[in-house]
Amino acid sequence: MISHKEARQLEQFIRKQEKLANHCSYAIGGNAEYFASPRTVAELVALLRYCNQQRLEYTIFGIGSNILFSDRPNVNTMYISLKELLQFEVKDHEWFVSAGIPMSMLALAGELIHSTDFQFTHLLPGSFGAGIYMNAKYYQGQIGDVISRVYYLDMAEPSLEIKCIPVEECKYGYKQSIFQNNPWIIVGADISVEGHPLLSKLEIESVLEKYMLMEDNKSNLMQFHAFFSGEMKRLTQPETPVFIQEIEEYRSQNKHFVNHSCGSYFKNNYDIGKSIGALVDQLQLKGTACGGAMISSHHGNMLINVNNATAENILQLQAIVSEAISKKYGFIPEPEVQIIK
Ligand SMILES: Cc1cc2nc3c(=O)[nH]c(=O)nc-3n(C[C@H](O)[C@H](O)[C@H](O)COP(=O)(O)OP(=O)(O)OC[C@H]3O[C@@H](n4cnc5c(N)ncnc54)[C@H](O)[C@@H]3O)c2cc1C
Figure 1: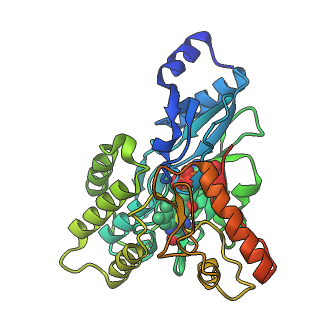
Figure 2: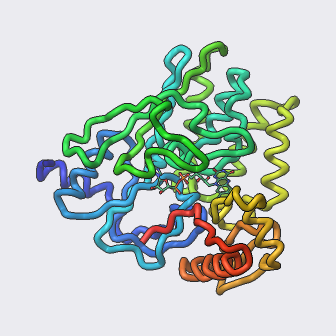
C-alpha cells in the first residue's frame, strides 16, 4: 500500500491525456488517460503499487520501436515507458545497465573499451530492457549473448522485490525469451567485460548526459539516428570499424530512419527458407497502401507510416500480407510488432 501523501506525489508526474504517438517510432497512437516515465526503480515500484491501489491496468514499454499503440487507448490503463530509467554503472570488469538505456549505447561503450562484442547494437533502435525481452538481434549478434544476469520485478509477487536470473536460465532463442511468458518487468542486467580495458566512467556519463537532453524525442527514429551515428563517428573517426560502416550502409539503404516504422513487422519463418520480405516481394505487394500506411517499396517486411496513418491502417496492411502469404505459402506469418490495446 502507498500512503495518501505518496499517491499525491506520484500524481504530479503522471501525465494525463498524453499522446502515445509521441512515445513510439510509428508515431501512431491516441491519447492515454494515464502515462508515466519513471526515472528510478523506486518510482516504478511506487507507480505499480499506485496502479494496484487505483485498480488501473498497466502496460510496460521502452522506446516504443516495436509497438503499435491503439488509436483509442484503454482509459483504464497506465502506459509506463521505461525510457527514462537511465543508469550505466561501471563496476571494474562488469557493467550494470538499466532497462531504459538505448541498445545503441552499448556499441559506443564497446568502442571505448576496444571490444567488437557490442558492434551489432549500433543503430539497433530500442531500449536495453526490451532488447533483453525480445532477444533483439542483428546479423550474428543477439542481446542474450552479451548479458550475464538480468534483474526484474515479478508482478505475481506482491512484495515487488528485485529478483535476479542468470542468462543460462533465460531460455533464449530466435526472438524468444523467458520474459515473454512471465509477468516480469526487466529493470536492468549485468554485462561482463572481462579481458578488456576499463570503461571510463567520465566518457560514458558524458554521452549519457547528452542523450538525456533529447527529452521527449527519444522515440523519434530520425533523432535516434542523428544522435548515435554522430556519437559513433565522433568516437571512432578517422578509423570507423568496417562492421559499423556496413551497419550504417545497410540501414540507410533500407531507409530505416526515413519513415515512421517498427522495422520488420513479421518474424521470419525459417522453415520456408526465405525471409518474409522476399515473400512479399515475390507476391508483388511492395508499395501497397491503406490510408496513410504503406508496405515499404525498399523492404517488403516493413509496414510504414507515410502520412498520418492510423493503427487501423497498419492492421489492414497486416491482414493483406497475412492473407496473401497464407494463400500462396500455406502459413500465417506471426507479427513481431506487439499490438497494444
Ligand atoms: C527501423 C527499425 C529497425 C529495427 N531493426 C531491428 C533489428 O535489426 N533487430 C531487432 O531485433 N529488432 C529490430 N527492430 C525492433 C526493435 O528495435 C526491437 O524490438 C527493440 O528491442 C524494441 O525496443 P523498445 O524499447 O522500442 O521496445 P518497445 O517497443 O517499447 O516494447 C517492445 C516489447 O517489449 C516489452 N518490454 C519493453 N521493455 C520491457 C521491460 N523493461 N521489461 C519487460 N518487458 C519490456 C514491451 O512490453 C513490449 O512487449 C527495429 C525497429 C526499427 C524501428
